[in-house]
Length: 231
Ligand SMILES: [Zn+2]
Image 1 (cartoon, rainbow, N blue to C red):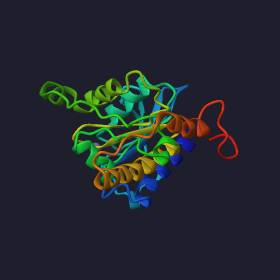
Image 2 (image 1 turned 60 degrees about the horizontal axis):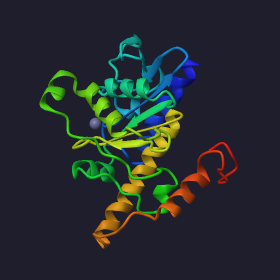
Image 3 (image 1 turned 180 degrees about the horizontal axis):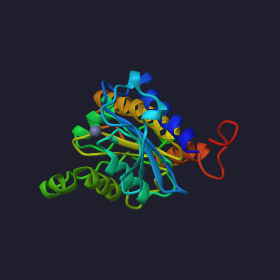
Image 4 (image 1 turned 90 degrees about the horizontal axis):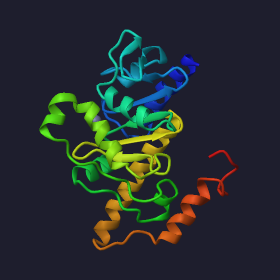
């Protein structure tokens, strides 16, 4: 199991490169093995073209290394905070993908302007508050997780599988790490579409609720009819 998680996490990290979401070593992906409370995460600063499943680092739910010779990604504490808060998720992905990051830097949530968005997110993609100087000084990465969890209050993590960290970039998740990577790719696409939408019409309005719900629930939940099942 741990070996297959290592392979999956490595594969998810490489998928982010293939899809043009990361440059150099920006970005990281992890998976959790809930029964054992273990997290498998990309090592810090290892070039993607030399990365293998054996390089992945295994930590406990507090982010303490239990297996591996390399240091875990510097965003480890954010990933761990999300796994502790959202038991339904199995993978987390962080990138600085250009368009989603632009919304994070503009301090704007991404409105649900169209059905592409509504197929994946049941509403806007939220944005966190800025961290306070104390939060940055004491536990920057852990407090980034806390800010994301706060921005998700009242939302189902699987119905809103991403948050923009203010002035930083998106964190995405899913039932598995490969689903989280998929959501990161979709988020980048809808962020680009939303930017072009407000460029064409600065007064563009979100999708009407009925159409948003139709698209979201066609793909998710007990009444899903999209595809061949098992989305
Ligand atoms: Zn980052």
